[in-house]
Amino acid sequence: MNAVSKNIAVAGCLGIASLSAAYAQSWSLSPRSDVGFSIESLGMTVVKGNFASVKANMQFDPKALQNASTQFTMHVDSLNLSKPSLKNMIMGEDLFYATRYKTVNFKSTQFKSLGNNRYQILGNLTLRGVTRPVVFETTLTPNVAHPNVLQVNSKTVINRSDFGMKKAVAGVGEKVNIHLVGQWNAQ
Image (cartoon, rainbow, N blue to C red; front, side, top):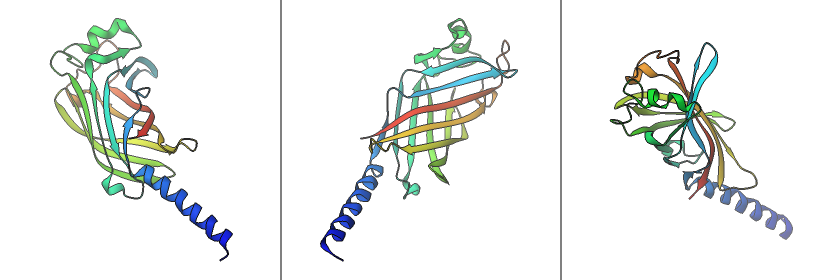
């Protein structure tokens, strides 16, 4: 191998090592990320909500998924709704019961690779003091221009009655679509 080939090989290895190093870091969720939900009824979106106050962190390396983990805490009183007229009902005892339950929490138990930057993130969601297993279908895409950024798109669907919320109140559907769209930043 000549000197030029050796230099190219070393530079390539350093580039791979720096990309791996970015993955080996802890990640924090960008404040501009959208963590929220939507509820549909008869095929139409009835209400959308997003949490303005979210604390989240992630440990992630696609080559060591057994060590991957993530944890979220959403503050219920920071909830913004697409239909403010529904706020009292949604924050009331039949749904979030915000005066008693101040946070919604998620803690992962396992990451499973589906290939092409897609993962299933299994974990436990705690809402209204009730904890149930959920699976988030997630895409974590490296940002080519910014190696310390991962684009994230994650979603799951729950039945609100599984968490002690009243069923079908005022035409608001039973199924709740939960989403996370945004970016993880390397710490």
